[in-house]
Length: 162
Image (cartoon, rainbow, N blue to C red; front, side, top):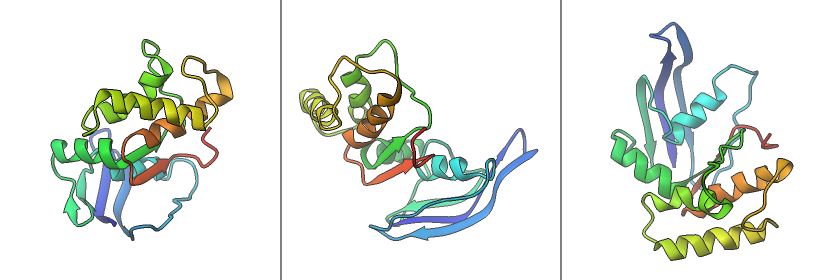
């Protein structure tokens, strides 16, 4: 279960108020869509729930436990969250398999060999070869990287992935 309790997020020393007092609960297994016009805070909310950023005020709970410390956020983000970013976010100095495996390497209990095997299997499942990627196929890489950990939650900023 995900619970957002009176969450605020401000930028530029409080001049930009992206979120003001957001409260919501998403039961386990529920599919939820956050919709609204450009600039209304959808991506900001997803970044907070996915522990990519911290709220200015308020709390986020995952299965009843608050995401209050950087260590707790890191473990949650790397083991339970899969992100599909709107932009490609590939690291050019890494191979495709290494890019896919990267989220799981930080805190996964799997060995590096197991993570690499899983990354290669996931790439194969979406029709990508380990060393090849271009243009529209980058979405498949993003989707694959989101699954390489042991993700329980998946977040995307755009359902089309673009």
